[in-house]
Image (cartoon, rainbow, N blue to C red):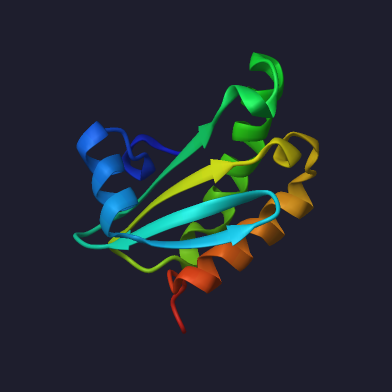
Length: 113
């Protein structure tokens, strides 16, 4: 699970990221990223199309851990919303990590260090 300081929670923040951020797509989901402020904050959205609650929660946990493991390479000031597709419910951790890495690279949210 993402730590409290790394979670995007406020409705206004979601709206700002969706409206002004950059989006990238992957077969397992899409990532909206906005570079502003300080800190690194993310949220994961799963609709009922992903499956029942247990499948949605499992997918959220796996992708949250994938994001958490990539946090050290994410640029400061990044706010992101990962919207999962139904195929994400079947993803392994390795697939989730690869998906997150590709999406972050495509959105330009990774430090070049």
